Length: 297
Image (cartoon, rainbow, N blue to C red):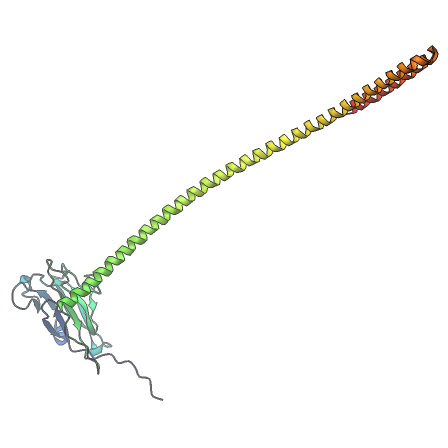
């Protein structure tokens, strides 16, 4: 079996490359020059070369003066035993003075008080991102040797390509902002719907409680009416029974009277007197029984 093959990093060139997007001019800065002394980078208002690289002695006539500073620091474990940095602004009389435009990495402005370590690879650092509304841009990179079989076009990006990337970035940011606003609007709508639902639920709960109380009152009233109807029905039944007994008593008395009348025509006075006495006893007994029954009802 073969041994483990470690990934090989592309070999970096011994210079930094600054590409002017608008003019496609390129400036090589040897790493050895940076190791000797810090270099300032600015932009001149005159001359064919917009970009000025130097030690800062004649930088005060530049539009942006010293925009940024390149410097190197020794480190034993670093490739080539040196690390290379870029920092916004320049040092003057012991004070660090930032520029007005900053240094941008990945579309984000970097803090002026912190150096940015340079890494080998394609362009990743943007300097002069905006100056008086002009489209002047520069890309700083530490180029590397192409790998075998790598046919990638290593020409600097054109202005159209760069503007296309910026347009895509702007569209993405606008879409992200639109989505954020949509989410906020949705959140507000959801909160409003939740509040409305809570109010309606409380209102419905109150109505249900009112209906429950009304049904309870109605049920109580119906029960009272039922009890009253039952009482009236019982009284009516008792009255009918009393009326029936009275009718029976009257009929009995009528029969007795008729019987006495018939007997009176055919018997003597003694017999008639006995019949009358027995009739009075019968009528009294029936009246007593009916009276006791009516009192019991």
